[in-house]
Each structure stands twice: as structure tokens, then as C-alpha cells.
Amino acid sequence: MLRFKLRERIADLEFRERKRIQLQEIATATGLNRMTLSKLVNQHGANVQTDVLDKLCAYFGCRIEDLVEHVPEGLADQLGAGR
Image 1 (spheres, rainbow, N blue to C red):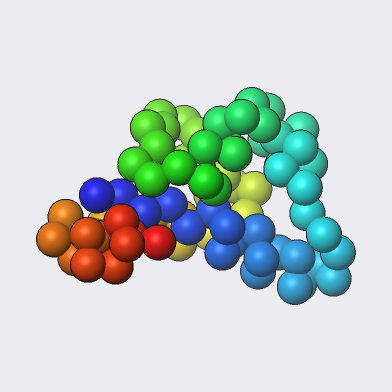
Image 2: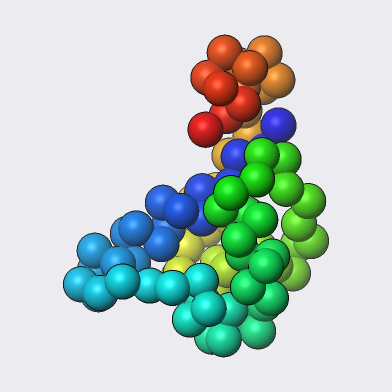
């Protein structure tokens, strides 16, 4: 299972910029749909295209492994579906 770490990236950015970051702000800056971002933050096993990950990496100035983590299925079940 893939675990998306968008929430963590947002928290890091909020800390650095000392302001609250809304999903709509990220959507506007990246050209992504706010609903797509919401799914990445809230849904287990969200389906996402690579161009979405590319835009998010550019926005946050991070590597792909900072946004996505592979969690083996058995471990994901033990950890509450990877959250």
C-alpha cells in the first residue's frame, strides 16, 4: 500500500512560513484540483497520477520519497491501514 505524506508536507510548510496553508492555496499554486488534494490527505489508498506527484514535489521543493511511502500490506493492517 502507498501512504501519501501530504499532510506532513503541509505541516512542515506551515511551520516554515508561520501561517496556515489551505488546500485551496496549494490547488491554485499547482493547478491541481482541491478535491484531488483532499483525497490524498484523507483517503487510504487514493489513486493518483504521476503528474500530480510531480507538481506537489515542485511546490514543496521535495523528493518523491518525501511525499509517498510504501508500506507492506501486512504492516499497513497492523498500523491501521498505514496512517
